[in-house]
Image (cartoon, rainbow, N blue to C red; front, side, top):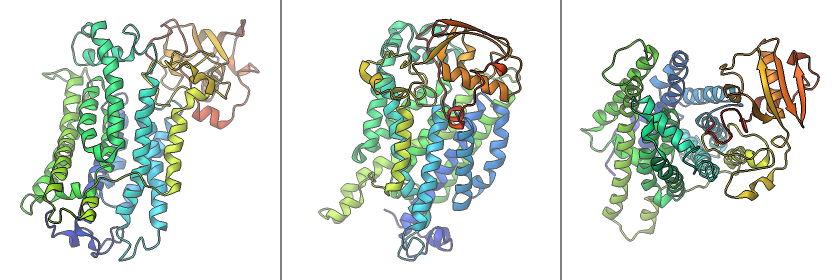
Length: 512
């Protein structure tokens, strides 16, 4: 490890970083990791909006300016993470996978802040810097939550429809990537879809294993970066950026210290060059997104330009991290005291030890992923684009016994919605099943939830025809129906949502 001579100016006077007695390389590495993480987190929140709601990104950027200007300020970072949790929670109950992961990560940092602040000596000369302890405490909770997401995205895909080339979400996403980039979607035929479906499951499972084992984690980084970079072509760069930000937490601070200060001469150029390059590419991405598809003339397809600017914003960071991670591995052979067990232990990558309170976050993430098998919900449980069905007492999962775990009745009580008149079918605030062709088969609780949403949005009257338990129901105004308008607990309305089980669009079609 090279000598770092600027630790006093970087962390000596800031109580959040601790006194100069702390290991200078550790302080510099922790600051650099924090700077990278904040940059990625801001971009992840912005990328979430640039695809579907470009105008909303302006508000995100305004709110993120302070944390971008001072990315190593603990109060600003804490405030921004809290804001992200609020935004992600506001997207419930139909939040995308990456927004759910953002929410759990924010919760992990919240609990970690309490743990780090309450630890004896956390702010003393012997206790070390608070922010390093804060990020180190959050690493296990956030990292395990990421592994939970990987685990369930693999497990959910183990169903007959995902491996069927005629219905597989792998095929849909391939066609989507081709179409968005101006290519012929018919290129994704059955001969391509089947190996893509199998390959997706295998690669995600391998990434999970490599990241879970500290000694193999540096191999998981390039595989994960490559996999998610390919998925970005289908407009999943928001999910990729969120995942990459969590990758940063799994890398030792000494790797970031080496990147920040490989030599005194290169230190400013490397650090400022990476961040400056990323922010310029990020700004171009936002401007292209705000301009819109029909208002600009570009030599490449509009979506392709957005993906390329995303590549320019994040890949220099990630490739630098991968290279530095493998350089850290090679440096093990250059230890002066090679037989020293202590020195070798210091070179290992961090494991999964954590304060018991922090384990509540990944446990909550696990319960959320298991929700379809418990009969609780099917949306925002990491099962989007997985073709999974667990409703109406049946499942297409390869392990047919998973439905035996359903202790709640919500997925078994289903209705067939024959016709709906009143609300706009494309309203993004309504259930996603409303965008499919009728008749739509959905859980009864989902119909009640959406009816309550229509009422809250002031959409009236809503005429409705549905069949429940074989009995047709014709409702002139859903607000006045005693069953549909019966009060629902807040947690059912805010946390539970369900996909269509079947519709005029097909039973096994790939659903969001």
